[in-house]
Length: 445
Image (cartoon, rainbow, N blue to C red; front, side, top):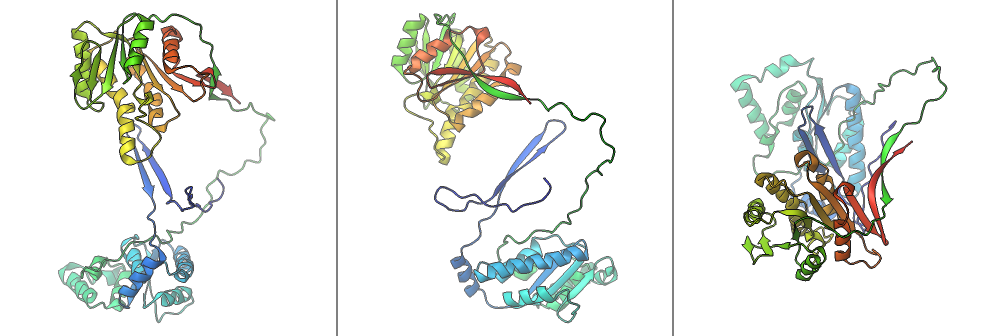
């Protein structure tokens, strides 16, 4: 990156401008990571600003500006002038909000400038004149040169004097003290309850200083270097040999379809126990349970019940996000997202913790299946890659079935995957266009 550029906001499908959002990450040396997402405040519409301008009485306001150096202070004034010139024409700013934001929303630095204004036109006029050499309407100072003046308001008597001149709105003395280095409690200006809004104003104009390492005049002895190599994930077509599945024990099926359970049991010649999402923990006969998807204790009770009855599963098959009822479609409503996470990644997490809690190390494979490209279940794929560190004996496979899988039913694909030997299982599998693909890695240059 050699130069900055404007950040143009995106628009949604209806043409409405979206607020700019940014993610900020902090990675600690010891492994403690933090991430925060910031979103800009959407500004009021022109009609709302006009309404507030009409309601707020016309009074004087004190505009404070500060910077590290005189040069940066000059740029601050120029930026604010351009901002007001642009937005005042569209009636998108309130003078009281500008003053309030500059008073409480900016760090007070060494080089300072203050002036009193009555309206936006007055602000523009004084911003254009503040560095012209005029002194009558402006208060200028550097706190390093005027420490003695700021000391006059130290102590209880000095603070009382400040409160008096703020209450009287003696802007001249307030500005004079502030540019000398005094700390002003700007909130006292608004103690009557009429609190303005903080708005988005031009930020600090940092000096763009080049810190690149000087270019060496000495040329390299080798005219060229080897191209950079890196690993690139690829999807590789994979043929499956038709083998009769031998899962070697009970299959624990997280599903809602009884006919699929029966069909799997007939094909596998093994006992299949189905687990449905429900409102409470319940056992329905020898082949069916109901559990709460978001209750880790229900998963523990489930595995303990199977252990007690001697039906510890060798294989687990999780289909809740792929069943016919479509619990988890790509819907961005908040409550729907919560439901999708509950039956997807959270369910898998609770189940893995229950396996670890109950010491159920006999389970050899875990297959999670989803029938569409869905961001709410993609997290399972990433989560599964860390499981080998927790349960090294468990083989986990994330299987995704996209539309157009050559007419194969969900049951056919399940049986095909169960017929693959454990040592040949892939972490990620995708069925698309009648083909089976597995995720691999290649070296790119």
